Image (cartoon, rainbow, N blue to C red; front, side, top):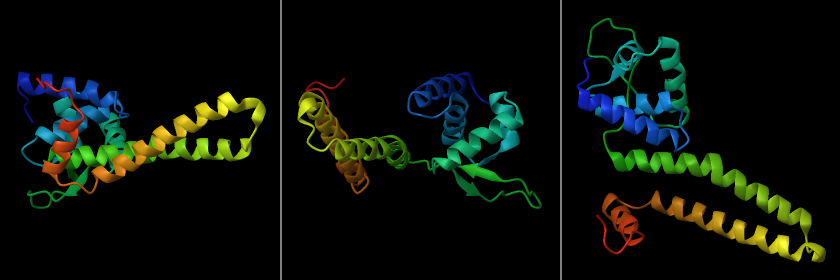
Length: 172
């Protein structure tokens, strides 16, 4: 698959962005490539397009699969036994999936750890200040988790409104 210079730039930028969202850079670049690709791709095509080793691509694809971001797809080529993958073309679907996975991987374990810590501490009067800080963290993370769960039930227009509502008064 030949990529234009613009496609290479986009994949590079999205790869960097994805690496800040919990994915490895390679997995983020694969996700970006699959998002802009006009058809499902197999690992060899991905490796060629991104100039990466086949094993590096396999690891990245497994990572994306563990995040529930990829979907298997059947090849249109008769007798082609290679596995093809795609990602949903809808950015809102991808956003919801990434938000749910980040919650599951990061927020839920943090809330569980803080609740456990809080339960162990009980009413330790000698650490009232520390307990207040733990309670504040627990409240914030629990509310964030509930908010993220709520975004999963919103349609695209409602989700846009929610995100715009929290934005600055004068969006760019």
